[in-house]
Every structure is written in structure tokens, then in C-alpha cells.
Amino acid sequence: MFRTILMLAFWAAALPFAALVGFPWTYITNDVGFLYRMCMWAAFTGVRIAGVRVQTVGLEKIDPSRNYIFMSNHISNLDPPITLPLIPRRTSVMVKKELFSYPILGKIMMIGSLVPVDRANRDAGISAVRDAVKAIEQGLNMTIYIEGKRSFDGRLLPFKKGPFYLAEECRVPVVPITITGTQEVMPKARFAIQPGTVTVQFHDPIEPAEFGNRDCLMAKVRDVINRGLPQELREKSSEQSAG
Image (cartoon, rainbow, N blue to C red; front, top):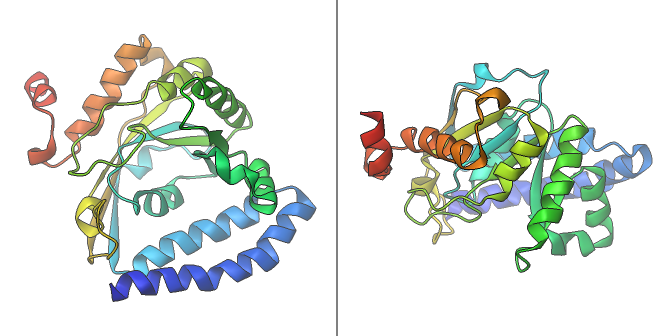
């Protein structure tokens, strides 16, 4: 519990600086770059302060001059503050639509090209995909936790279809990511952080020419992410196809 409090205290200490310096700078310049770098540094540093060691695999496969759609599994609240700072260049993400109703925060998120999602409205997924397309067309990456919610046990949940419509529309490479270890460091039902090692594995980019149809792309991404999981958490179907 102490490590969790230490991490939250660090983030709380960084917040006033972001509010007093980063927010005004973003408003004046209409450029979120400085604030984004500040937030990514604070997020990753806070996790390290909590005793979490991060190991990356395959990051050298990512070309910083290109933009990608990163599709990751999701097993803990620690996944975003660990994963997002590792991604070269700025990435957009999908966030709850309600957060955009806050005057200052909403404006900052709009400048940052974050994508609002109304989880209570299934038809709103089309609007989210359109906004994500605009972000990618600006040259941003897009990072999506494709199960839509956290897994309790680390095994893959069903994937949302929206990200694959997005990939088909934008025709930019898709990079599957497998996160392991955060389900032990901070499981879904626990607040306290247990020191440990988290591995973030960036798999080979799937180029648009290799997509096939949406179902085919979804199957490819699922199989790749699944193979990166510990043996005991993998889906049997993928293991059989791999053999």
C-alpha cells in the first residue's frame, strides 16, 4: 500500500506544475507536445517509484518516422502509464466522452486529438472511429486496448470490432502489443501495488498489404498477442494452430 501511496503522491505533486505551466502553454500555443511529454514522464516515473521494473521487447521494430495503430491486451490500471510512454512519438487514445464536458480538461484533450467514446451507446462507435481516423491523418499514432476492459485473470477477452474498422479505413500498420506482469503487480480487484517486473512486447508490425479482411486481421492480432502471453494463460486454439 505504501508504494501505491508514494506513486499517487508523486502524481499529485506533478499535477500543479502541469496545471500552472503545461495547461496555459497548451492553450497559448495550441500545441499539446510539451504537456504530453511532461505527462508521459510523470506517468512512467510514478510507476518506477512504486517499484515496478519495465522490460521492453521488440521496440526496435518500430520506425519512429511512421505512425501506427497499436493494439494491446489490458490486464491492469497500470497498463496505460507503462505502455504509452514507451511508444515513439505522440499517440492518441480513446477516453470516456464525459471527460470532455469539463471545460479546461475537455479543451486540452481536444487539442491533443484524444478520441471521445460513449460506452453507453453502441452506435457511438462509428463516431469514435471517425475521430480516430482524423487523429491518424494528423500523423499521430493510435493506441487501443482492444478488449475494451481489463481481464481479471490475464487471459484474452473478446476483441472489440471498432479498432479493425479503423485499421481498414486508415491502412496504416498495426502493431500488436502483449503486456504481461501487470496482472500480478496490480490485479484488477486490488488497489495496492506489488513490486515486480512487467514486460511490454512489441510484435512485428502487420502491414496493410497483409491485413486481409477485418476478421482475418482480428484473428492475426489475437493470435500474435496470445502467443506472447505466459503458457498457462494462452488460448488452446492458438497453441494448436502454432503447432
